[in-house]
Length: 395
Image (cartoon, rainbow, N blue to C red; front, side, top):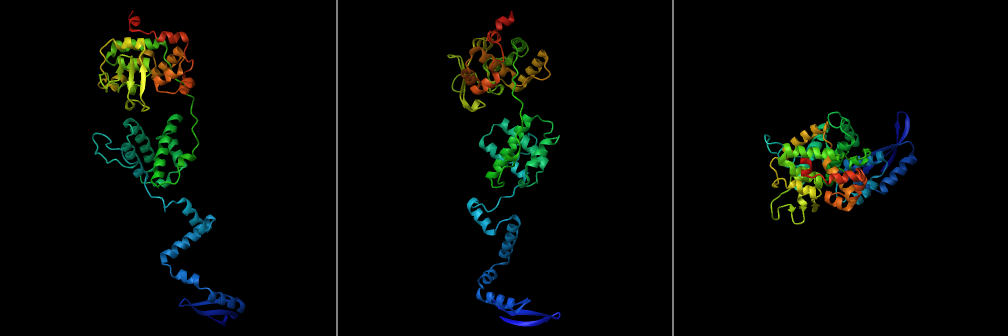
């Protein structure tokens, strides 16, 4: 490397001229000393330059981009590599997936459309054995979110802001109550948890949302007179489904569980007439746990009005027809949600004062019984409820 003096625009400049790693290099300096210092340093250590020249163009571009990005974010390239070595666990990058592909399909949409192959989150839920009723609700909510966000939108664009906009939109969630919004957000949260397991998201955006303030649960309990009226109505106009009403009202069995009961003998049957119990196999309960429900004396009398033959064909349609007439009879604009089961819990807890027994039969916990049903009815009304017999109403 030679140091030479040049005249540049009538000013003295010092030039270092020579070859570095086989390539000519010229550098200009204001003073001779600066030129000599740089020349000595360059001639002493050429390892860095040799290493750099040995890299491919793509490797150099990758290093330069990483260097610029690390400086912009406030850390070094070494810090980033060390952090990834600890937390990356071999995952080099997050996968790309659209929201439409993530939601996927759960099989046949309707009997007229072509059957899509199960895929995505819904396909995995179908494979895992989620009940079809729950899967249908899950599908409806997630398709609403997909349509709002855009099926081709990347899952990386799912943010707390996007979810809040979906909830506030009048066509998707704006008119819903908080309890329904909370359930819908939980379903989106489940989708995002699935995306994390698929290495598509690194964190769940739902975790950053504020929790919904839900109204206190206030169960609606039918009066003894109202219970008597609907029993009369069912016996007169809807006699075929009378067992469903009786089991729902006097045993606290959920309507969906009543429709799955079988009165046949043997392992598939659900009635133990020796102990006067309804025996639930785990697969027939909402909680997927075995349950035994004791049938009261008035329950047995109502069931004995006809030969028990369960399940009933087309029971859901027939049950809805009964509820429509019962609502009209009692003067309700809307049938109170699960009021028959709530009535059983309230009258049962007040009559027996044994929360453990009532909770076991209803498939709840004692805490739920105490929080929601304690002393909702009087002792005398509870006694009247358990004395509603068919012969007394016929008089």
